[in-house]
Amino acid sequence: MKVLVLNCGSSSIKYQLRDTEAGSVMASGLVSRIGEDGARIESRTGGETRRRETPIPGHGRGLELIVESLLDPEAGVLKDISEVSAVGHRVVHGGSYFNASAPLTPEVIDRIEESAHLAPLHNPPILVGIRESLRILPDTPQVAVFDTAFHATMPEKAYTYALPYHFQTEHGVRRYGFHGISFASVAQKTDRFLGGRLPELKVVIAHLGNGASIAAVEYGRSVDTSMGLTPLEGLVMGSRPGDVDPGVVLFLLRDLGMSADQVDRVLNKESGLLGLSGVSNDIRDVETAAEHGDPRSRLALDVFAYRVKKYIGAYAAAMGGLDVLVFTAGIGENDPQMRAAVCDGLGFLGIELDPEVNAATRHIAKDISPPDAAVRVLVIPTDEEELIADQTVAVVEGLRS
Image 1 (cartoon, helix red, strand yellow):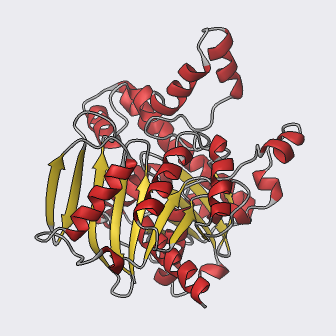
Image 2 (cartoon, one colour; image 1 turned 30 degrees about the vertical axis):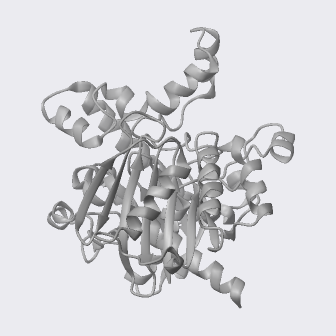
Image 3 (cartoon, one colour; image 1 turned 180 degrees about the horizontal axis):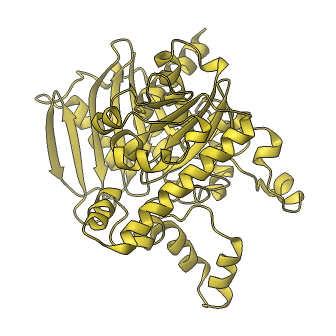
């Protein structure tokens, strides 16, 4: 089955066309700067990348350009758009409505819209992309795959905030967790890597990238995760602070006279590695600056590693033990230095690294712990698009049967 995977942002559309039977990516690309000067589409097929700058006033035109690139007589991979069997959409927030992927019916779209206030930066542009996709491909089955669904198995004690209870029941103020598509992908790959043993194990998965979160996966089910109502909670990230005293927000509002929008910008775009280092939200730039003696960059890296280390310990305690620690995403898969910093001092939990194997491991599935270690430490690359495509196929085939 050929599945078009779409990930719509406020000014971008990331896409892949996947052949799920062959397990291959037929085409991929990015529409960027939608509604801005310098808008363009970048498409990749057969190892060749083509770029085209053109006005793209909205997501509808961006999706039309994606279809045109797939049908291009010279570089396209389809003869007719009817060859696309289904479209899978990444949806960041499903609220409390969805614990699995769902076909995009009018009722499902209404529920996604009702959850938009919980993810105001993400769900609205996703809804625009969904509606435009339904307009352009009206006869093609379309499926929503939710980032929050993997964490729907969290127990009430893990997802409940100690706020007045009616905030949760009336307004949905609770912990939902994110990066669920990535966690689900990595959980499946970890299960295969370990020979089908995931349902027997207590696992911590650290998704470390520009956005970062960590999950406790007990016997194959998410039982806790670091992100909460929004993707602000938890680990230090590229430009987000993670855990912070709520009183800090009150201080910014009352004492510094900042507006809610200004606080939002500080928390989402000016904090984390960027805010601490003053250098960049990209950990590679921060590590380079630290190597050249910049103390703020060194501090940023130390805070990042320390926060991950604390969560690993907390989740080991919450699950009553730990069998496997998994690193994934951009930093987790490709940064041996940060993996070593996170694991340093965790020998009392049974966590050890083989220094040589760790240093040589980048973006491949690998056990980087010594053979006799009590806890296996793995690097498992994530593939969110593959999981979205697979879940889209499952939903479509379920509807047909």
